Amino acid sequence: MLLRASPAFSLLANNGGETNSLSSANSVSNSLSFSSVRFSSPAKNPNNGGFSVSAAAPETNSRPLTGVIFEPFEEVKKELSMVPTVPQASLARQKYADDCESAINEQINVEYNVSYVYHAMYAYFDRDNVALKGLAKFFKESSEEEREHAEKLMEYQNKRGGKVKLQSILMPLSEFDHEEKGDALHAMELALSLEKLVNEKLLNLHQVAEKNNDVQLQEYIEGEFLNEQVEAIKKISEYVAQLRRIGKGHGVWHFDQTLLHEGDAAAA
Ligand SMILES: [Fe+2]
Ligand SMILES: [Fe+2]
Image (cartoon, rainbow, N blue to C red):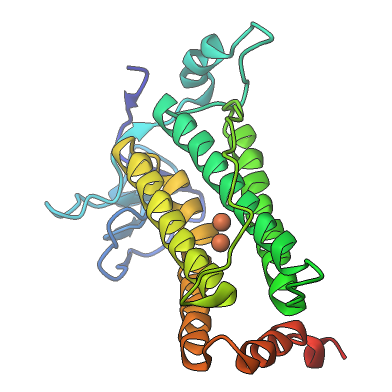
C-alpha cells in the first residue's frame, strides 16, 4: 500500500494578532471541511513567529481529514506497469468484464435482427398490391432506428475497449397477411412483441452490468435505451389498439394516411 499517514493539518501566518475562533457548520461527510479552526497569538505559540491555524481535534463521528496523503507518482506506478504493450490489446479498457463485452455483442445482434424484420415489413407494405405507404414509411424508419441502436452499441463496445463480434441474422418472414386480423394489425402486433422482447434483452444486459459492478454500463443502458424502449412500447400499443377498432377495410387506409403524414405539420 502506498498511502502514508500525515500529521494533523496546520497552517502558519506571520501577522500575529489576537486569538480568534472560527467554526463551520457541521461538516458534511465525504467533503473536506473544518469542524473548528483556532487562531492563536505568538505568545501562546512559542514554536513559531506567526500565529497558527490548526484543525481542532475532530469529533468522533465527523473526521474532516483522513490523515492520508495521495501520492500520484507513487500510486500510478502500478497502473503504468499494467498498460498493455501488445498491439492487439485495448489501451482504454478498464474494469470492463468479459461478460459485459459478450452481452453487448448479443444486444447488437438483437437490434440487427429486429431491424431486419422491420425492413421485411417495409418491403411488404411498399408492394404495389398492398400499397400502405404510411406503414411502409413507419417500418422503414423503425428498421433504420434499430440499426442505429446496433451501431451505437458498437461505438460503446469500442469505447470500453471491447471487440465487436457480429453474429448471424435470421431470415425474417416476407408475408404479413393474416386471415382474421389483416396485415396491418398483424404486423403491428408483431412489432409490439418485438419491442417488448428487446426491452427484456436490455434489462438482461443491465443485470449483467449490475452483477459485474459496471456502474457506467448500467447508467449508459438506462440513459440511452430503457426510456426510449418504454416510449416505443407505449406508441406501438396505441397503434395496435387503434387498428383493432377499425377492422380490415377503409379504416386501415385512413390509419395509414395518418402515419404517412405524421410529422408533416411539424416539418412545415
Ligand atoms: Fe432498439
Ligand atoms: Fe425499437
